[in-house]
Image 1 (tube, one colour):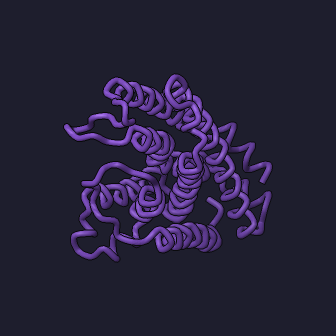
Image 2: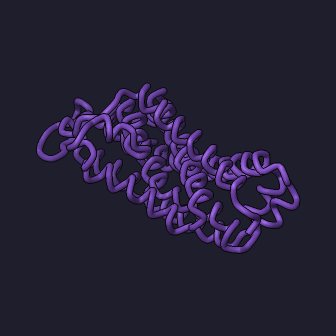
Length: 264
């Protein structure tokens, strides 16, 4: 596992991808502080701000945006998982890895843990950045707001989402052996969520998709002010089971795929 972590942190493609994700997160921090300032500009004595010509509780809007500042960049973390897994085939490292660790189950598990730790590290970094940005936005109004249990739970859930979605893409890419195909598959899942194509056919079918399950779990459990938000396709508990199932399926599929192939 230590050698896999070393491999990850020394791959230029991983650092380029991580740098892009970091820049994307900084952009979302800018949007967060801008949104908070906009809320405070229209704040009234009852703690409400005006949004689409109707009063909305400002504290709930701020909490929603703080959680989104970590969750939204997480949508792009499948690229990181695909790049980490695809490097094994793109640079021809798989043969060396198998020679070093002939037990391929142990090899895939070590790779999975290393990829998860890498995603976790940057997810925690994004969470810290979000807490700082959120504090700077509310420090002159309600600085205690960012320490509410709802806010901390939303940020923690978003960090878990970053790790889970990275691992799912990592496992899928080890199966298909192509970085771009792994990315395209996850983009397809995202398109299913955005267009609600499967939801129109059957909510059960939509609930079985990983990105949809992430939406059902973390966004549904949060505190939101948008009464026009579309209906969710499953409960948070069911969504958690779906996501756990996708991680297990992706890792087991990767183990089977690596065991059945040669070391090229």
